[in-house]
Length: 606
Ligand SMILES: *[C@@H]1O[C@H](CO)[C@@H](O)[C@H](O)[C@H]1NC(C)=O
Ligand SMILES: *[C@@H]1O[C@H](CO)[C@@H](O)[C@H](O)[C@H]1NC(C)=O
Ligand SMILES: *[C@@H]1O[C@H](CO)[C@@H](O)[C@H](O)[C@H]1NC(C)=O
Ligand SMILES: *[C@@H]1O[C@H](CO)[C@@H](O)[C@H](O)[C@H]1NC(C)=O
Ligand SMILES: *[C@@H]1O[C@H](CO)[C@@H](O)[C@H](O)[C@H]1NC(C)=O
Image 1 (cartoon, rainbow, N blue to C red):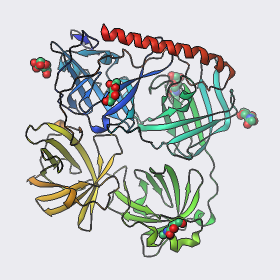
Image 2 (image 1 turned 90 degrees about the vertical axis):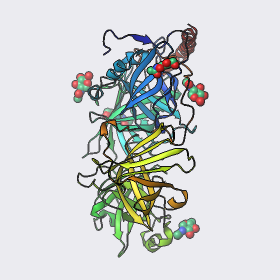
Image 3 (image 1 turned 180 degrees about the vertical axis):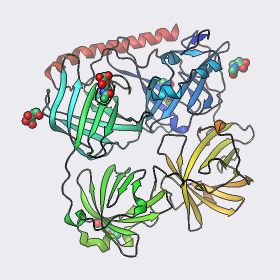
Image 4 (image 1 turned 90 degrees about the horizontal axis):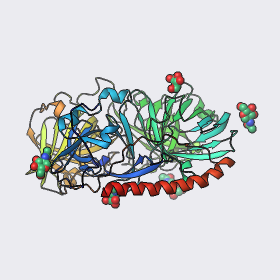
């Protein structure tokens, strides 16, 4: 709600005088990049996307980063005579998708002239839970390094029979029974659908997953690109809600009508398109793996980042090959950390291989799969030989739900350490622990003289272990999207002097902290009891310091971001009636674009 009496300034305001505000907060590097956002079309037909950039300290169409309060960002333009301030709640869902919440649509098209009013208008926790806050999805097209979006593992994978029901303007589309099929072969990042026995001709489509997350109200969401946008003027990005029955594995999925998670998506059974996926009955397992003669160690059972273990079965989603391996224990090799296993992928590729396990504490698992596998289990001595393993290359996994009581003492440092960034010595780093939450540590980079803060991170330590005189600490980043893990390697010279270096996601063993790491000196021997409420949870980018005064390149703001009153979305494009439509909608697209440009110019030179 916008309180009465507060002057609201339209952003499309005056002949712009470029704001020359200094930004006083930074966006985490993971938030930065070039994005697309669904934008309204003047005639309300079809879907369009407008580009949007997020730089290290500004979202040029909405303001410069002024202050951060948790995940709420106060953005501000300082036009010489007046201020334009708004509050956005940013939630990074994956490297590809950034979800933004605002109190209501007015927050986007308008802004406040005083900071208190803008802050009071941040979306409330309650409005996020009840889904009353206005939601905008941003789809990353390029990150800060100019790379294109990365593949993302779909939360749904395997082989399914499915039924489909879609909404169209004057008729309904459906595929009855369970004659249609879905699978995630060859890549776990893509769901392939083969719709058969439908009210339209058989049709194949693909969803490429971009992000998935658990909502505040315990719903699960997935965002993907829909291959149907290639043949029709359809939304390229779609959002779906899904639910899996833990017993039967049956999945219900409901899709919104456009690139939001709200339009036409009421609940799991009532949506623009709905599907029910039933797992295909899997082929029988070979006799030697179907009797539970061997099982994985008890400490391993549970859910890890990319692994799920239950007695004799380990499901491993390989984020390099995008293959999901269902691994069954065949035999334990005596007096060793090796297991002979049988593995089957989602593409039904089968082989025997050897698995090495290492327990690095209650919450850290490391494993290796043999380089060569075999179709024959009699090759056990070849595949389980040390030569079949690269001794130093482990896959490190953190436990997803850490039982209470197992979280203390997981960070190896206590107190406060400071140092200088090795390749940018005018930057100072600080690493410190928190007395009230010993499983957390904080990291900050600032300019040594001006003390301007460029980067702040919050880590939860999962544990640490020693290996060849080095200390490995495995952490989960708490200030970016869930599931971001980082490993540090450290060398402790004395109680007061340590060297540390990042060692990637999988605790690379070939990193020498003494040579390439950062030297940190203990400044405060005791836990620094910082006020948690003011602990900034954020991080602009490391070793990047450009001028903090930036001019927005553009201040055109689309008036609405959740449009589409009348839009016949994902018709299956095979029906004859579709052909006639393509032509006419082609013309209207052209008109739309044209109008859009005209409107844009009007706003720009108004
Ligand atoms: C975003 O940044 C890129 C690279 O700096 C630039 O080419 C592009 O025009 C920008 N887009 C917008 C909408 O500002
Ligand atoms: C806005 O800019 C003006 C002119 O530079 C400056 O005097 C004023 O302090 C700025 N206001 C804020 C809130 O930064
Ligand atoms: C199509 O579905 C109907 C209803 O479930 C079923 O009776 C029919 O046999 C199916 N046809 C084919 C070709 O599978
Ligand atoms: C889903 O939404 C529809 C329409 O809003 C409603 O009629 C139905 O009862 C809802 N179903 C559930 C399970 O909430
Ligand atoms: C793995 O297979 C390759 C190609 O077949 C072979 O050259 C190599 O020696 C094998 N490695 C081991 C350790 O068996």
